[in-house]
Amino acid sequence: MTNALEVTAPDGVPYLDAAREFDYPARQVFRAHVDPEVYAEWIGPDRLTTRVDGFEPVSGGSYRFVQTDDDGGEFAFRGVFHTVRPDEFILQTFEYEGYPDHASLEYLHFEDLPGGRSRMHGRSLYPSVETRDNFLSSGMEAGMAAGLDKLEQLLAFATA
Amino acid sequence: MTNALEVTAPDGVPYLDAAREFDYPARQVFRAHVDPEVYAEWIGPDRLTTRVDGFEPVSGGSYRFVQTDDDGGEFAFRGVFHTVRPDEFILQTFEYEGYPDHASLEYLHFEDLPGGRSRMHGRSLYPSVETRDNFLSSGMEAGMAAGLDKLEQLLAFATA
Image 1: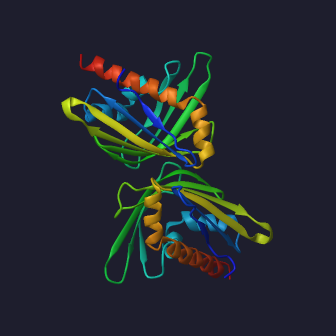
Image 2: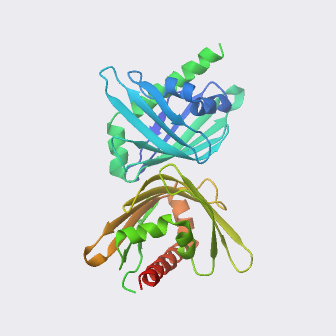
Image 3: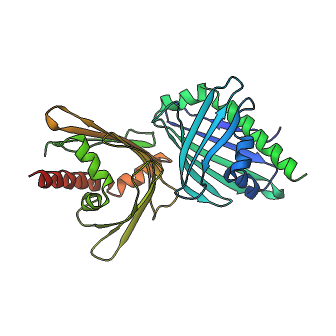
């Protein structure tokens, strides 16, 4: 996998930056973020199954999804879309309901690269460095990486 | 005025912290943040008149307001409410439409103090230190302070 997720979490600031390239155009990667059925297929680590429970990917809309593990454990996430600009930009809040009032603000940009490829990059802002580090120590980065690998596999399958 | 706004903007981090006390209970200060007619009376500096153009202060709702100066200049702001918990907590996004894609995430807590007084405190997270400093250099702090002074005057008038 050459299109690996790169996460940077600088010391002393309450955010992290993430970037990943895809062998597919920005519009396809964007679509995988706003189609609830596709989103449920790829978001999160492999061991969790996702059920979307509301998904309005437009400026001013809301979303909620619930992830379930094999032992019946449930993990719910919710947020609001501040801006959704097709094929380009998503700005949304994100909260794990098990860690309430620690929502982050997520900037996500989609950009085309030559040769039908694209690059997605973003910044997630947390209410404190401690909150960011708690998310990181929960295995978030591995879950993001696994999810985005699945996203690329879905695009490969859809375009095969 | 002993209940002055205190703003702290530490070097090198993309947020600012703000706090202010009021001679009125948390529930009254909270209400002034969620009643659109009252909100339009106090938000912003004296020289601007505010028109609320959508205001749904519930979790998942949106808002927009437009401020006008005597020369006909217009300044529009919009955002989404991630969480609204009556009398206690508001978590929302905030964007000046003239500076698009630089939205902040605003944490706002309302707490009662002895003697019928209360304290409001919050953190605003910006996408970068530069964005925060651009807002600060635009006179935002003076505008916030003037607005909250007006809020307290409205409460004094309403309870006189």
